[in-house]
Image (cartoon, rainbow, N blue to C red; front, side, top):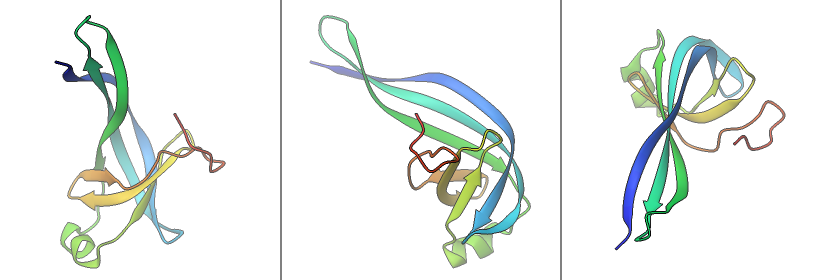
Length: 107
């Protein structure tokens, strides 16, 4: 029987920005943990699966108002990449793919 595991592969942090509908909402401090899902087959070989991002952001926004509005945001990272998603308190929940500044999909 195959075994499934999750491995922490990278952490990065920095200062970024949040926008909503193309308008700047404010600056944020973010921390991103990247996790890799793996399938371990009976021979012991690990087959890579999907990656999962866990993102914490420090922001000065009203979380109750955001929840009521159901706001979708774009989180802009220092290196130009961005990610669309939602805020749940300090957690940023990805709602799409991590993208490069030029609009192509990031790895």
